[in-house]
Length: 336
Image (cartoon, rainbow, N blue to C red; front, side, top):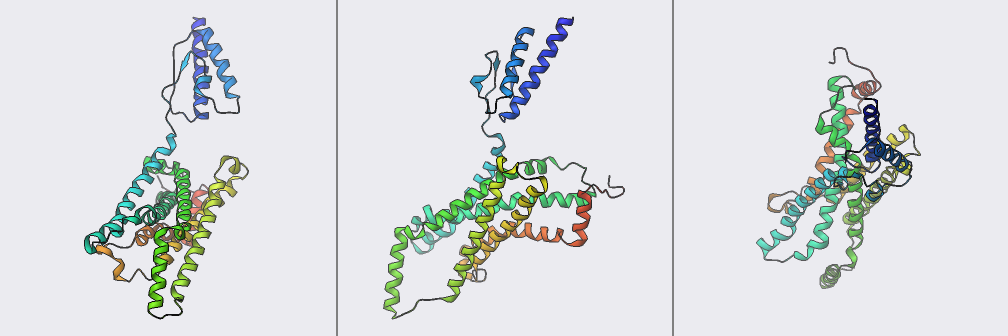
């Protein structure tokens, strides 16, 4: 009987050791084979040795008596990648309809050359700013729930908790697409189609006997929205770097929260302003509503504008002070 109890205890130790090993390797589930007491002792010692290793443990380094199930690849990235892919496909089809299909149907003009650069460079920022808005939308929803319930101790819905757990991944994907958008934009002058258009514009200017093609309105629009885009990308870079484990460990909790929250909303504000200034007067020009569809920058700005608007309302003294008290532990009487 004592031998059986000892074997059971050793197996429990191995299970605990393997559970810690799963966390180190970001593994969702593992299983072990039935082993005798002596083998269990050896496995426990081996696993403890592997846990002390400062490097990630590979499958081949485990004892032969253990077999791991098929390990999932990047389990925390599955949902963010699916969201990003869905958004990119949707925005691509919408932009393709407006910029390529509509001219082909109505004017018999083939603009398919726009797909690799021009269409993609509308898809990337649209998806990026939407992902960035989805990073801070669950925080806003959580604040509304806390105000409604009058306490911070009640659990959030499962879908909201799952959403909040992948905000880091969504933010990093947003930063990646923003960087790609900047690179695509810098490649504009290198395109052959752009050079042909420049020659065409110069010929038309000479033909119309114009000595100066300066348009102050367009110049100001370009200067402002490029500047806002650079600032937004710079703030996103700071947030992305601060999310690295080696960097975040150097901050205390308040410093990390200040960077992720305050700079995050600043980045969202700058990127939204970047999109709106890019549109400039296109809001009211009917020629930009192709087939009665709004320009992409309008749709891209909707969700970020909603998030920023709700956040501004929550920052009002009448709501902000109560929310701060709730987050410090205060509970409204009869909140349950």
